Amino acid sequence: LEIKEWAKRTVKNRGVEVVILDSISRSGLGSLIEDTTANRVIDTLNSICETWMAIGHTAKHNEETLYGSVHFTAGEDIGVRLHSIEREDGILGASLEIVKANDIPRFSPSFFALEWNPEGISKISKAKREDFPGIGISKPSLVEEMRDYLQEINQPISATDCAKALDRPRSKVAELFSNHPWFVRVKQEGRNVLYGLKSALRNEVVS
Image (cartoon, rainbow, N blue to C red; front, side, top):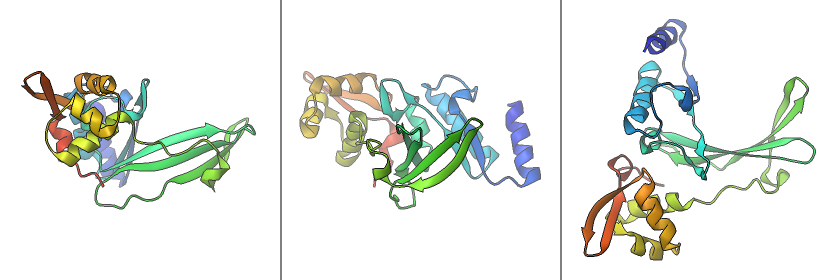
């Protein structure tokens, strides 16, 4: 809280227009898997500055999804995913892909080449996708496909029916429904358990 008030005064007194948090895992506001922590981080950043950027990390078992509570994703207006790959000549390729966009179009991915010397980065230049074979733009992960499908149908669904609709293994779908923080058990019809999205994601617009 002391840092929050100091940051607010600094932003106001120095005319700061953008605040960057690197990273949300160092915010010190609690466990990242807790919804209350995510809300506190988002509310704190909103109170400090109108425009801010927060850097998050992916989970070890899923490099396509931000680690932690679903409210981190729900609280962002623009989500950008970073991929990188190093060529044999030591040049690092990086791609920036918009994965969530509120009130803006989804621009094409951008690619950059980073060159190094013994002191650090020596040059950053624009690149093309073909300059770094294999960097690719990732396909949606299974959990993202499930999220998008539930938003599309806007009703609870069983793991069996969801797996059939997405042509994915039922065991994987059922595991994510049971364990991933994006989903919630809604009701049971006979032997079928129906799952839906947590309220934070239900009202997102997926373009």
